Image (tube, rainbow, N blue to C red; front, side):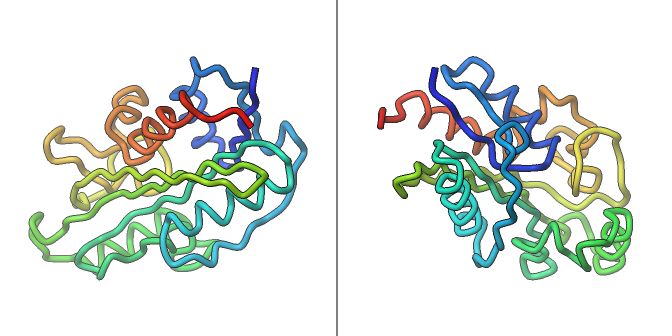
Amino acid sequence: MRTLLLATTNEHKLDEFRVIFRDLPFTLLSLHDVQLDMDVEETGTTFAENAILKAQAYAQASQMLTLSDDSGIEIDALGGAPGVYSARFAGLETSYEERFRLIFERLRDMQPSERTARFRCAIALAEPSGYVRVVEGTIEGVIAENARGENGFGYDPIFLVPEIGKTTAEMSPAVKNQISHRGRAAEAARRLLESWPAR
């Protein structure tokens, strides 16, 4: 069976990927499994650029087919911020509760139609040779009036999907994986992996 390295230290992401890729003919390994402890600087200006940087660096270091992603939230009223800086918004040590407070403050008194946002995810698959493919997924929504829900992670409690009437933190993992940005990108990555060339 072939091996796929899931190059993330985020346990929530690992869980989501393991569920989505569970029946592919690949052995799924984490960075911890291969004892690869290195940081790749995210210097890209897009999610795709950052995903490629990480996937190629970890593929080179591990000599394995590697999957890496970069994702975040884009809020239209904030000019698309925090975007690629989602994980670093207001500083790396800032709690998500404080980040939510800052966002709510900036969007105060805005109508739902003015609070539009999207989650975006780019997934890169890279071979040690440098061969790389990228897929993306998005989900549209609005910023909720307050944080809701206990599931998910990151910005999930403030991202409301109007058609469902729930934040992504209020959805079951199964529902979220079907409609989320990462779920959609991972499904596209899954289709690539199903016909991935032997090397």
